[in-house]
Image (cartoon, rainbow, N blue to C red):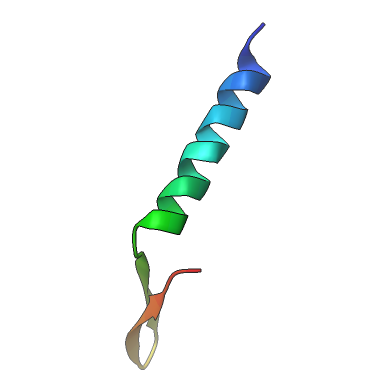
Length: 39
């Protein structure tokens, strides 16, 4: 009954997290890996 509201709350929390905390990810390739800044 409240599933859509729960999904919307999770999406909001993740979006706020991405806006306020610097994020990085590590991309791994066959010839090495690099760190990429988040959006």
